[in-house]
Length: 150
Image 1 (tube, rainbow, N blue to C red):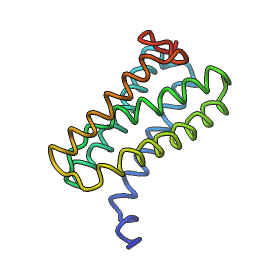
Image 2 (cartoon, rainbow, N blue to C red; image 1 turned 45 degrees about the horizontal axis):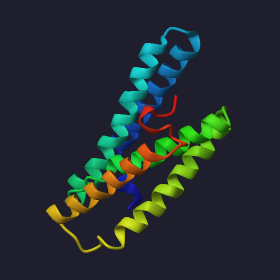
Image 3 (cartoon, rainbow, N blue to C red; image 1 turned 135 degrees about the horizontal axis):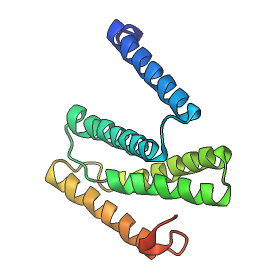
């Protein structure tokens, strides 16, 4: 089983990712990458995370879920609220852990009634969850409503 995870191809991809991460970190610390390129790289990495999670649900499991936006919203706002109250890397790490816990609880709440749904019905139920999260976030004072957290 472990041999499949540590195949030559996977180790090459891991090594490539480590090299790219090191080069980008050196470029940022040297001041060669401006803020525009940093923000663009952050957006690219966030979209890579979304694409990998969609590939897991749709490509590997064969289910059609539209709830990813709601879970990303929970994680992003929890991390942003923690960083706003504790503006350092410790606050960011705590925010990620809190976002993970809150998203897991929300996933448990959604998964219990939708456990046996498949296809279009699962898509409708998870889309409803995402819309509920969007409305809740828009009406919360701590998230600054539609203006969002700056």
